[in-house]
Image (cartoon, rainbow, N blue to C red; front, side):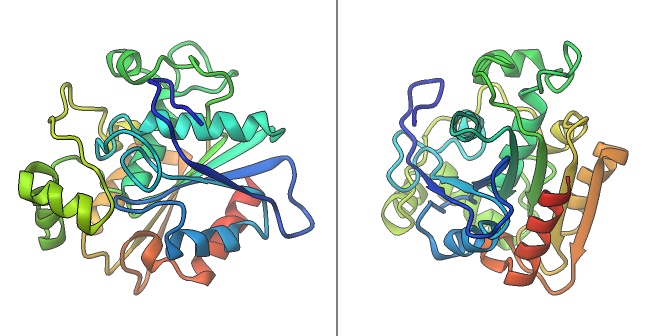
Amino acid sequence: MRADDGTWIEAVYDPCTGDDGGETAIVVAHGFTGSVDRPAVRRAVRAFSRYAPVVTFSFRGHGRSGGFSTVGDREVLDLAAAVAWARSLGHRRVVTVGFSMGGSVVLRHGALYASPGAADGDGGADRDVAERVGRVGARSGAHADAVVSVSAPARWYYRGTAPMRRLHWMVTRPAGRLVGRYGFRTRIHREAWDPVPLSPVAAAALVAPAPLLIVHGDRDPYFPLDHPRMLAAAAGDAAELWLERGMGHAENAADESLLTRIADWVARR
C-alpha cells in the first residue's frame, strides 16, 4: 500500500481463524526495529486472529517498506494507510494496537484522524501538525474506532534508562544509524524532527470519543511506570489502564495470556 506522502508500505492481511470475525479488523503497529515477519509480531497476529482479521505492516524504513524511519513522526501516515486498507476490505470497525514506538503512533493517529461523527476539531486540535503529516480526514476511512497502546512513552526525548540512551545513540549518531541499518534492518532518517510532533501524552487527551486501552509492564526496561500513568491521566475517563505484573517491554514481552485479553477487550468495544 502507499502512504499519503507516496512511501510504499508492505502489509499483510490475516483472516480470522475463529467464528466471530467479520465487521471488526485489528491493525497492529510494531515497535522500533520490528517488521511484519518478526516472531513477536506473528505471535500477536495468531492470538488476535482468533477474534478478528488482522492487518500488519512494516513502518517506513523497516522490513520491505520504503523510505526511512522517523521514529514515530511520519509513521502516522503508514498507520492511516493500513487502517484505510482494512476498511477497503469491507471492515466497518477498525481497532489499532501499537507496541512501543507503534504505541505512540496509535495515540497520535487517534488524535489526528477524527471519526466522521466527531465535531469539527475533535481528535485533531493540533492543526499545524495535522497539516504537515496528513490533514485530518484526508484519507477516507483512516480513523480508528478504538485504540490500544502497549509500552508507549508519554514524552519525547526520554533518556532516563540505559536502553533509551542506547536507542538515542543509534538514532542520532552516524555510527548508530549504521548499526540500525545493518544490525537491525532499520533505515533511520538522518534529519531531526522539525517541528517536533504532537507528544503521546498530548495525543492521549485527544483520542476520545474512541475508547483507549493503555497497557504497560512493571518491569519495562525502557519506560518506567510514570509514562503509562501520565498517559492515562491525560486521557481521563476515556482510558483504561492495565499495569502488568512481571511484564517487560512491548510485543517481545507480551505473552499469550495478555494478547488474548487485549483481543477480548477489542471484541467488547
